Image (cartoon, each protein chain N blue to C red):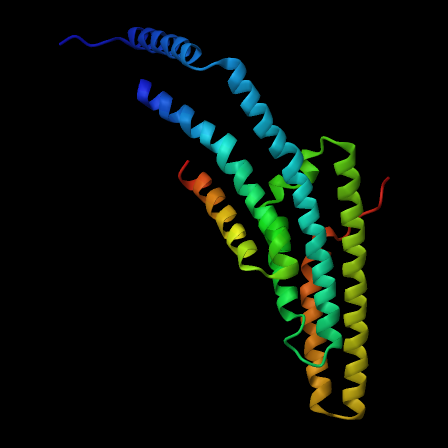
Length: 182
Length: 60
C-alpha cells in the first residue's frame, strides 16, 4: 500500500493552502472586505469604549443616588433596587469585562479625558457615600446606646449595607486613587 | 482539509466582526438603559450581550 511520506504530505498541504489563497482572492473583493472590516472595527474601537465609560459613570451616579436615598428614606425598599442594579453592572464591567475596558483601547485623547474624568468623579462620589454611611453608622450606634429603639437598628443595618456596597468600587481603585488629568 | 480551513475562516469572521462588537455594544447599551430606569428592554439587552459573548467563547 502506498503511503505518503512526511515531505509529500507537507508539499500537498502547501499546495492546498496555495489553492485556498487563490480561491479566497478570486471569490472575495479585497477592497470591499477592507471597507466593511474598517467600519466594523471602527465601531468597536470608537463607540464601545465610549459607551463603556458612559455606562460606568451612570452606574456610579446611580449607586450614589440609590445609597443616599436608601440611607435617608424611611422605607427600606427605596434605593435598594438602584444599588443592586448599579452594583451588578459595576461588578460586570470591572471583574468580567476588564479586558475590554477603555484603558486598554485608548486611541483618542477625548476618550482618555472622559475616562479620567469618569474615574475621578465616580471615585469621589463613592468616597462621599462611604463617609456618609460611616457617619450614619457611628451616629446611629451612639443613639442606640443612649436610647435602644428598633428604628436605630434599622438605620444601622442600612448603613452597614451601604458600606458593603461601597467596598467593591473603592477596593478596586485602592490605593491608586484616580487623579483628574486634563 | 479545505472544509476545515473554510470553517475556521468563517468562525474567525463571525467572532471578530459580529459577536464581539455587537455583544459588547448590546451589553453596554443595555446597562446604560437598565441602571437608571430598570427597564425590561435594558435587562434583555444585557442578557443578550452576555449570551452572545459567552457563545463566542464556548462555541465559536
